[in-house]
Every structure is written in structure tokens, then in C-alpha cells.
Amino acid sequence: MVISSILIDILPGISREDVEDDPHLGSKSRELINFAINQLTEARMVVQDNKTDSYTITELGRIAARYYLRHTSVEIFNKEFRPKMSEADVLAMLSMSTEARSQFALPGCHC
Image 1 (cartoon, rainbow, N blue to C red):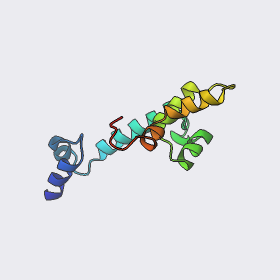
Image 2: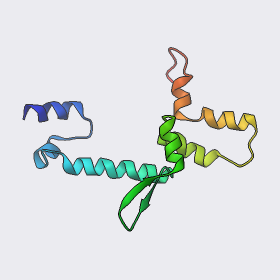
Image 3: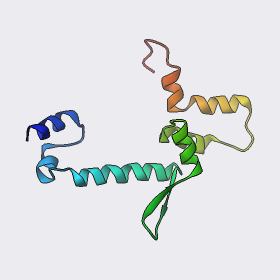
């Protein structure tokens, strides 16, 4: 029970009732997994095979994983990317990514 009390203080979004109802947090884990899968599916990083109820990573997902891109950045790229883009357009698109915001933030800037 001490471990459960510590976990409740550390993990946001988990209430005491969650731990009392499901000590191993199996339902909470499934909920978080489904949430993550839905986000990755929306970003076209994985596809679901309805016959087997399994998921397969897409080429876009492999590239994102290789270069540690967040799904929010991939969503921005999916929305903004066009077949013909100038260098300025590409740089503007890249600057919208969450990675660019954290990489290029000035010290002391709370951007």
C-alpha cells in the first residue's frame, strides 16, 4: 500500500480510487495505450489491421522513430507539406515543429 501511495503522488491523472479499484492499474494502462495508438493513427504513423486487431508501423512512423520526432510534429508536417515548396516554406514548416521550439529557444526565453 505504501507503493500505491507513492505512485499516486508521482503519476498525474491517477486517483486513489483508480488504485483501489484496480491495484495493478491494468485498465488505466489499456486506456493510455488506446489513447497513444489513436494519436499515432491520426498522425498516420501506424495503421490498424482490423482483421487481426493489430497495428503496423508505417514508413512515416519509422522515419519519425529514427529521428525522434514527436507525433505532434508529424501532424504539422502532414498538414503543411506540399509537393512543391520553396526553401522558405520548408524552413517555416520545420520551425513549427515541437522539436524546433525546444532546440532553438533562447536561454531565459519561456517560448
